[in-house]
Length: 248
Image 1 (cartoon, rainbow, N blue to C red):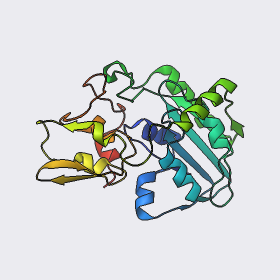
Image 2: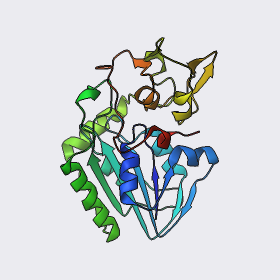
Image 3: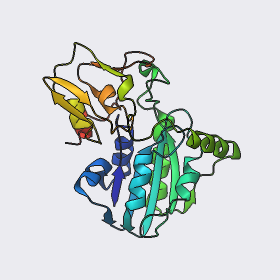
Image 4: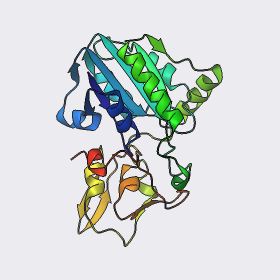
């Protein structure tokens, strides 16, 4: 079994590790130009952005070729997932493969412009119960697509029209770096797009950002801030070390 994941604060990596098998970082696969995966069971775990599948992930799936007997997708979300499961069910991979199983898991809310990170729980019994249930479904190779309500579909459709997280400038113009920065380069090594470079001991942001927030949430000195953040508190899944999230 191979589980492909994208994770900026560790939630998706934690889920991927719980599900088992070989965990493969999607940013690393893209960096290496690997778009063909073979195994008996293959899965995708990624976060919901703005009630939608992140364009970064959707573009990856459109290029991905998977040969397997069972293909699953799990979307993690904080407050509301919209109709992401329905969106996933409509996706066909590059070799014509569709998902056999689609589900979602509510995790801690990690959007710093939406919620105060200090109030977020890293895990709870309900969350772990859902993960355990999904693990059982995958072991049994259950065919299932989580249903989304008409309201969810309408909300996601509306959000896609005015999507907040396109690849490009992203959040770079809303980010500041304060005097606590030591130029350690952790932010650069976390960025899935290679969008951050260290020059003269300071991070410089280019214009190829997907607004994942990994640089803000994981800065060892809490030196990177968003001008609309709810607090200066930061979140990373308590089961994941920062080294596990590094891309380079």
